[in-house]
Length: 225
Image (cartoon, rainbow, N blue to C red; front, side, top):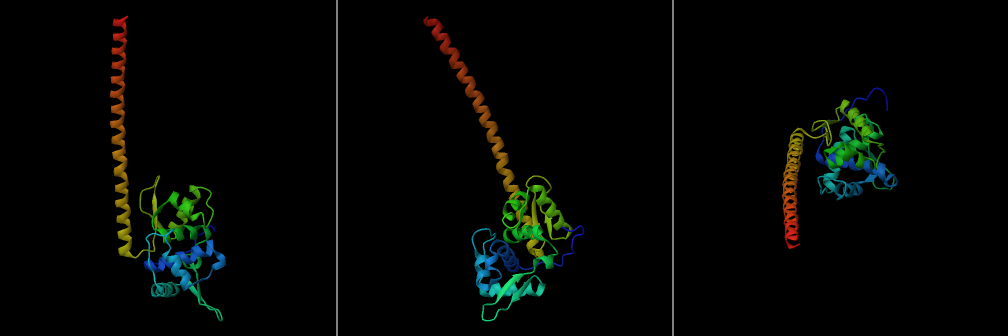
């Protein structure tokens, strides 16, 4: 990784374009023998049920419009082959000014949306090796300096990051959704804590009752003897 980070020329793009770009980069890394991709392969990759959030149902028109958007932005290229179907490849490295590790993180964010550092390490490792969470954090810091990602929650365990390619209205919705999920996840923890206290109190009372029964049985045994 170079000492001076490259300047990113990336700017917000549509949800369909983000999905298609994510698919192009993912397939280039995970199934290189099938890359570049035809429109049909792009549609299949965009609509697959695994490693995607939200689920999408892109058709050929959606995919072609997304590819036109990416080509206009400089994020994808069309490959002409004589007698073969037209194929497409990504240009993420140049468009974003990033390298391999950063592209793996960005691809996961494009395909799945906001994620924690731990989730990013687990999922992005299929495209690039990350030895530990510190390496992921360093990569995220590099992406932050290029204005490509930002944290949605405070620093600490479970911190959530998102990319900055959302359009303005989408970005507000995503931030609100993450905040709502955070509130929802906090509630069960509180309930679990209260339940733990109640169980502890019940165990103490049960222990006391058992002790009284033992004392009573001992007194009865003494009287009988």
